[in-house]
Length: 279
Image 1 (cartoon, rainbow, N blue to C red):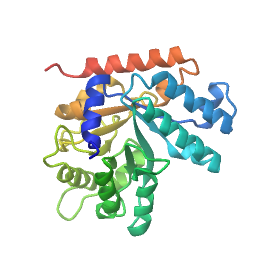
Image 2: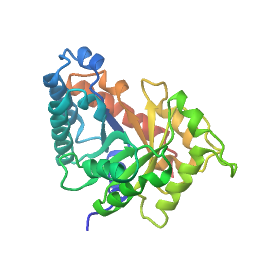
Image 3: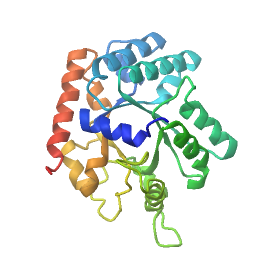
Image 4: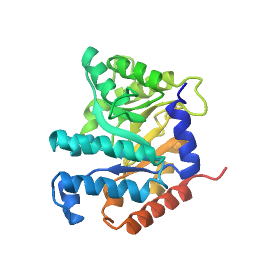
C-alpha cells in the first residue's frame, strides 16, 4: 500500500525543512536567465531548477500553465520535470488549480493523480468553487493513489475575497467552510492528513479562522508578493508547523547559476526555520 501523501510530506518537511519552490518558467524569467522563450529555454530552465535544488527542498511546485502554453512539446517537458524531480527525492505538487464537475473532474484527477499517468504528481491544487462536493472524484483517487490535494481556501490574490469572504446562510464565510471540509477529510490521520488548504502568506492576522485542519497549509506569497518568513507566525499562529511556504520568483530570479539558486534556497530555509517557534 502506498504511504499517504501527508505522511511523506511530514517526513520531507522534518528532514529538509518545509520550503516549497515553484517552477514558474514565465517569459520574463526566461529572459532574465538569458534563455529564449521557447521549448528549449523551458527545458533548460526546469532542469536547472531541479538539478540545483532537488536535494534540499521538500516540494517542487511546477505551474502547469507555463508549460501548457507551448502545447504538446511543453507538456512533454512538464512530464519530464515531474519525473526527474520525484526520482531525485523531492515531492511534486502540480499547480494546475483544476475544478469541474462529474466525469470532467474525474478526468482531471486521472491526468495528475492516477499512478500510471505520465503527469502523476504527489499532490494537486484544485478549486472548490463549483461546490466542495464537486471535488469528490479527485478526493477518491487521491486516497487510492496515496496522493494529496491542496484546495483553494484563502488565497493571496486580492480578487479572491469577493468569493472566499462571502458569508453563507449559516454565518460562516466560504473560506472557513472550505477549511472545515478539509478538517473533516483529515480526521484521525497521523502524522498529517493529505488534504491541505491554500492560504496566502500575505493575508495578515488570520486568528479568526481555524487553521488547525490536521493537514498542510500551502502558503504562497513569500518573496516577490511581499510576505517574508518572519510574517508566517503572525499569519498562521499555532498552525505554523504545518505550513509549507512557497517561494517562486523571489528565489528563481537568482538563477541561472546553480550555486546562486542553492544559496537563495538555503537563505529562505534558514529564515523559515528561524521563524518557527522552539518546542
